[in-house]
Length: 129
Image 1 (tube, rainbow, N blue to C red):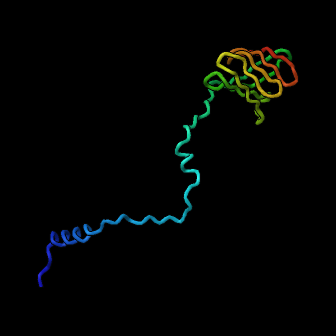
Image 2: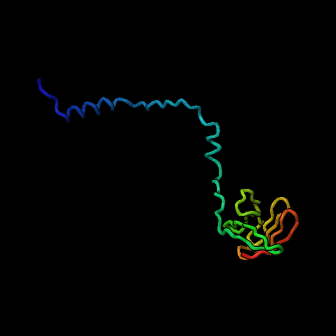
């Protein structure tokens, strides 16, 4: 008996596969995503701004310390009354250069070098970095 050449075997395999015009069946056990079209048409998500400066302010009256994180873009800051406190107040400005305002009466007018900060109790502090 004669051995078939590798070339003849390859040609026979290609001819047998060439007869198939069917697309492969895709089997998936997951249900279709009901929000797929909404997600595909959704506007791109904007990442939150990064911190531009973290400042420890020495403030008067009382020689108190206040801690502020200023975010890039000049429209957002985070105020903490204690250094290691997990509680912070988010302050927003309508546009860069305007005073930052937060819920509860908090207000910050200034920048990372000097600021006038009003706390929730109404006390006003003049601060320097």
